[in-house]
Amino acid sequence: MLTNKPKAKILVDGGDPDETLRVKNLLGFVDGQTTNPSLIAKNPEIQQRIAAGHTLSPQEEKDEYRKIVRTISPLVGDAGVSIEVFADLDTSAEDMLAQGEEMFTWIPNAYIKYPCTHEGLRAAEMSVQRGLRVNMTLCFSQDQAAAVYAATRGTKEPVYVSPFVGRLDDRGENGIDVIKNIKAMYKSGDGHVHVLSASIRQLDHLLASFALNAELVTVPAKVLEKWAASNFPMPAQDFTYKGVGANAQPLKPIPYKELDLNRPWQSFDIAHELTTKGIQKFVADYRSTLKRSA
Ligand code: G3P
Image 1 (cartoon, helix red, strand yellow):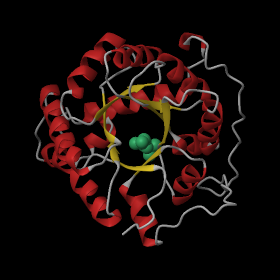
Image 2 (cartoon, protein in one colour; image 1 turned 180 degrees about the vertical axis):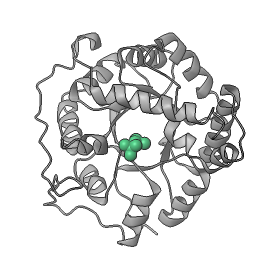
Image 3 (cartoon, rainbow, N blue to C red; image 1 turned 135 degrees about the vertical axis):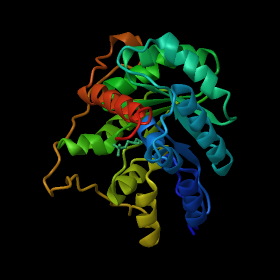
């Protein structure tokens, strides 16, 4: 069991309540949970239904999602459970907001996930005005994080922004630099956006997120189990992140950009190829649960 709880809140990145419970027993607590359409598609019960040849209707898929988050909700602490709207590249902000408003009623500790796109940001802006808690996902750049800040100014609840570290690493860029740059940029802000380090693939990502004072980090059970097996190491004072990819190649640094957080959110250059690809992957994984398996 973990005796010295880190300052950063620890969330489980998954879609299986049994796994969350296992991690809770291992650590002694779980601060929160993040889910997304790919992780829900991997849920063992959903997989069993598909393997047995049962097609899920969109309504049944939604019912399953609600059931999963309702089981997870009481297991976690005050970082809540993040629930992601179903959005493709054409989904309007109004559609996302309607889904978000419904999902927000599922559990008392919901955070609604919208993608870092123009429509996602518009949905977030409307959501915080209505008192919804939001988590802006598929963030890959400092510009996107600046837009999240500007679009949600005035919120009563903290807003999360989720930079995806591992997916930047996958294409040879140093994803941890994005965490570092966003944290540095937010220093001049009012603190209403909390950085939730995501797409964590290895122990070093976790330790670097701690070292950079990310407010939260969402971690697959597998990585948390590795952390527990090594007796919960914490980064030393002089911790430096190696910035080495899976193939032992050095990752390309991502430079810091001077951005003025007081600008209107629409003025930031929010386009990012990985955000588009991420949405496409979520859509594909969601649709895979709607089809009868071959
Ligand atoms: O928290 C984000 C996460 O679910 C995405 O992780 O491993 O698919 O890049 P990954």
